[in-house]
Image (cartoon, rainbow over all chains, first blue to last red; front, side, top):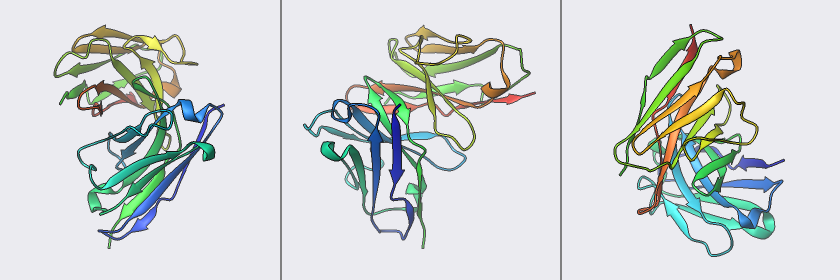
Length: 118
Length: 109
């Protein structure tokens, strides 16, 4: 069974940084693309970032986070990360990690809440 | 940038009825469209990919159709657990980005 578990969310001040982690199990992690998707409570889904499978490290970002967020993966640890810097109030959301199969987010974690506020 | 527009915003139906949800793309996405279901307090779940293929474990009452710019998610014989928010999603190859529609809330009438 595929399992994804996000951690690292919390309250941070504007301009601050936070690193989210997503631990994976139940599938061959290094063969899977991974993504982060966020959702402002009560609102819709917004894709944040993706990283392709393997160790090549090709990454993609939404314009809203480009230059501020960095996605990475540690295949031996079966973990994908989202390093978030220069955080803004608009970044407040639940952040989900998801497996990326071809074009689609096939399995999702339960999410971790990030709140940016002074 | 391709924009996905879902309609209606809210759909009120009764269990046993048929639901028809629409997703329109601002330009052709061929058949590269997916549908997700999200229940309150839960993560989204992939229902349909490549416009018409059911994901693993998805009941046959869920079906997807369409290509190009107009897509439909049909849920026949609504069950109580089907009342949720539904999102469509596509991927643009260059620049690489993934876009979701704004969602359709399917509520019990």
